[in-house]
Image 1 (cartoon, rainbow, N blue to C red):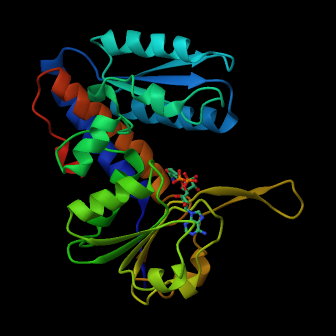
Image 2 (cartoon, rainbow, N blue to C red):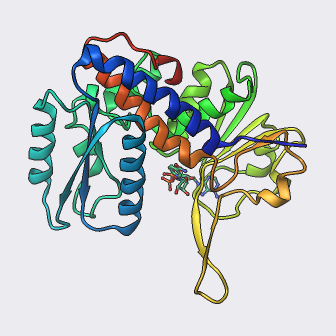
Length: 298
Ligand code: NAD
C-alpha cells in the first residue's frame, strides 16, 4: 500500500510544537511574535487564504495584523506601508498577499520588504541565501514539501528528482532545496520536450504546472514518490457544486507509487505552517533568542 504524505496531520504536529516554542520564548522576548499581512483589493481567494493564515497564527500564539488597501492603491502607497512596517520593531514578518491588482509590480514591492521580515522567502537576498545553501527564511510551499518528505524519512540524497514547473514561487526554490540536499535534479517547464520520458525517470516527481489532472500513471515510474502542488477548483457538470483537484490524477497513480500527497490535505496546509515557522524564526532572531526552528527550514 502506498504512503499518504499527510500535510494536515504534519501541520497539526508542527503547529503544536510552534505553540510551545512561542510559550517558552515569550519570557525572554517580552512580547508575542507578530505578522503583518498586506492585502490589496478584494480577490475572494485571497480573503480565504488570509483567514486561514490568521486562524493558524492564533493557534500558535502569533499576533496577526491585516492591512487592507483598496484595489486602486498605487505602488507608492504600498511602498509607504511596507516602509512603516519595516521600521516597526514589534513586527517580525511582512507578507504581501498575492495576486496583486495588475498595475502593481509584486517583485518590486517584495524587494522593499527588509529581508529579515520577508516571511514568504521571496526577497532576492533570501533567494540568494537559498542558492548559497545558507540558513535563512525560505519560500513556504517548497519548505513544506521538504518537511513532508522528511516526516516519512524519504531520503533525497542521490535520488533522481524531476520538478515540473519553474516558477519563482515553487519550481525554482524546490529545485534548489533538493539540490542542496544532494538530489540530482531535472527542472522541466512548458517548453520541455519528452516530458513523459523525463518524468518516468524520477524517484521523486514534484508537479507544480498549475494544470488540473495533467499527470497520470504514464508519467510515473513504479515505486516513485509523487508530490502534487497544484490546486484547482473545478465546477461539476451541474455548475452548482465544485470539486478540488490537483495536477495529478491521484486515482490513476495511487497503486503505482510508493508515496503521494493528497489534494486537498497535502502540500497546502504545509504552506501555511511554514509561514508560521518563518515568522517565529524571525521573531527569535529579532528578540535575541537562539533559534529553535532552524531544523524546519531546509
Ligand atoms: P505558475 O503558473 O507560476 O508556474 C507553472 C509552471 O509550470 C511554469 O513554470 C510553466 O513553465 C510550467 N508548465 C506549464 N505547463 C507545462 C507543461 N505542459 N509541461 C511542463 N511544465 C509546464 O504556477 P505556480 O505558482 O508555480 O503554481 C503551480 C500550481 O501550484 C498552481 O496550481 C498553484 O495554484 C499551486 N500552488 C499551490 C500552493 C499550495 O500551497 N498548495 C502554493 C503555490 C502554488
